[in-house]
Image 1 (cartoon, rainbow, N blue to C red):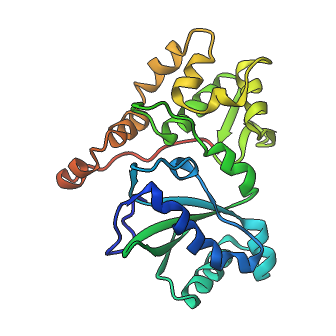
Image 2: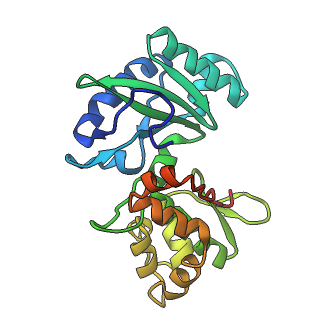
Image 3: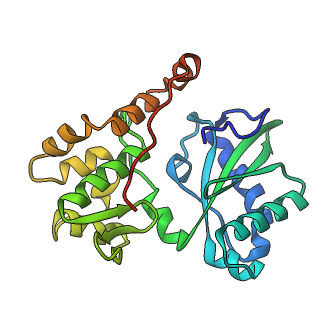
Length: 245
């Protein structure tokens, strides 16, 4: 969400992430679940700044604790628990947003509620090279392209799916890499756009040629070079990422 749900929140240095997570999980621990960081928050770099912290929590734990089944019921129950603990909150999409306060400043934490969160977190832990113009969202677009070439579809929170039946084919990084790139591939081969390209027989030429023609990929690349402020001033609306789930 880019840290824009609440008024008064600030971008934060990654050195603050551990304290932000402690505030989130101090409340969540009552359910027996734990929120896990994803994206850049999973591999924090002191000195790096982010607008919000993305975390995920397992839907099954919450459903059992709150004795509810529907996703909206889970979200509302989780939101109420944080409200009761004195936090400002909001709901949108799959997420419950929580405002933490660390170092005298307020921050936004987005808690996504997904099945099998521990495994999903691995799919959102990236190894992006320093100076790369690409972010985690680009990695998932690249994986969607790679899966399609093999006759599969890609879910950012599940893994490789059978394109027709939607049944799970592979959900662990090493398994996914082998399905997409061959028996010698490893989980590290899906850690970034650069790694995905390198794992392919042509060095990723076909993939990059296709993706650079994809407005979803290009638009998100613009955002990754931190031109979000230009977008805001110009009123530009970027296309949403279209990943087949």
